[in-house]
Structure formats: structure tokens, C-alpha cells
Amino acid sequence: MDTDRIVADLHAHTTASDGTMTLAELTATAREAGIDWVAVTDHDRIHPELTRPVVERDGVRVVRGVELRVEAGVERLDLLGYAVEHTTPLDAEIERLQTDRERRGAAICDAVEDRLGVDLDIEPGPGIGRPHIARAIDESAAPYDYAEAFDELIGSDGPCYVAREVTDLERGVDLLSEAAAVVGLAHPFRYDDVDAALDVARDLDAVERFYPYGRAVDDGRIERVASESDLLLTGGSDAHERTLGEAGLTAEAFEPVRDRLPDPT
Image (tube, rainbow, N blue to C red; front, side, top):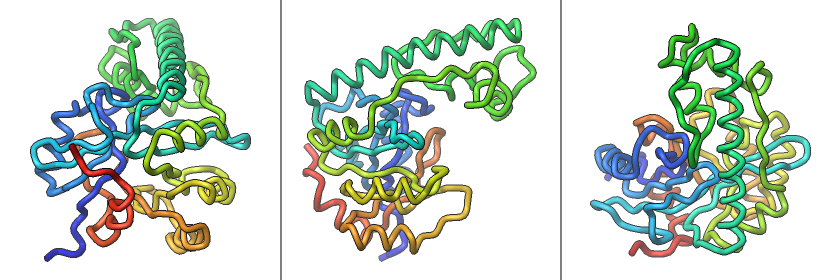
């Protein structure tokens, strides 16, 4: 038995937000990668094709999740909800956020088109995010590729950036705590103030430990916080493209998380 094999990738995006895989493609990719469990954590959206908190599709257990950005005061953080149930308050908040995403997406597109004199050929719709717009810029006549679009145009310091509304931290935690089997903090070492982010995690169920950060990570620090606050350790690849399993949980690491998730239906 391969004890190092990743069996659960608990952070992945689909075309319902800013990923490039449909749900069917995500499931097929997980199966091909030998992953048994995958969590669909689209930004500020519960995938409309997932009818239960956990379903089984072609031998892969698919966890219905959400990645919810929240305003924590010092900076904005990302919360992950796993095995999410629909509740009236959460659904209403997601609808509000999606309406604002469409407004913001249209405003960014207008700003880019006016600045560059190009047609992006993109229609802002549910789930739209800046990656959609960066891809459209890359495919247009504009002299920018995907990365340059973020770096020079639509990044937070860029001339075409437009801010969007997000949920207040306390409200976000309350909404997900009511709706999800597990609520965790995503990628703690991606934030400017890691200490503040980990302090938020202390009041949740979990913290993301296994993640392809691309920067220095103090694993021991995360594990100490998790031990002190009795947090589950989660992990995933944050897949936006067509690769899964870059990070995730082995069978042993996944077991305590699995115990908190409902059986697939």
C-alpha cells in the first residue's frame, strides 16, 4: 500500500467560478490521478450541479464546498466550507455576492477595453472572476499574456482594478458554521499577516496545511496552532487548471476529516 498517495484533494475550482474544468472533467481528472475524494470549492458559489453535500460520481466522492472571501479588518481571508447544505441565509448571501461579482466583472472589462481599445469578447455572468478576464485579455489583441494582465492591469494595484464586496468575517463564519460540516481557513501563508490569519483559524474547525504555496511555509507553526486549538488539517491543490493532486491528504491524514463528512449519496 502506498502510504504517501494523495487520496483527497480538498480545494478545487470548476467553471462555476474561475476554474477551467467542468464538474464532469474535474471528476474524470480526479479518477485518472487516483484521487478518491475531491472537494469543489468554487469562489462564493455552491456548484449548481451538486445535489447533496457529498455525492459519488464514477467512483470519486465529490464534496460540495465553497470558498468564501471575508473581510477580516486587516485584510481579506478565504474560508473553506465542506459538505455544505443549502440554507436560506447562505443562499441569499451567495446571490448578493454573485450579483456584485457580475457588476464588478463588467466594470473591469469596460475599464480594460477603454484603456486598450480592444474587445474582450466576454459576457460577465455567474461566477465571473478576474482569471476569466485575464484569460480574455490573453486571447485578445492586447499585448499582455495572462500573468501580465494581472501584473499590469487588473491586479489590486492595477489601473483597471475594481474592488468588490465581500462578506464580513463574523457573518461568514456564522453562515458556514450553520451550513457546513467543516469550516476551515484556506492557505494561511498566503496572507500578509500570517499571525492574524492563524488567530482566525483558531476559532474554526480546520486549517489548510497541505497546499502548493510557492513561498516559504512554516509547517510546524500551522501544526502547533492546529494542536493547540484542536483543528483538523486539510489540504488541496487549489486547482484552477486541469491538474489535481499537487497537494492534498494521504489516507492517514484524511481519516479525521473523513470522520466529519457525511457518507456519499
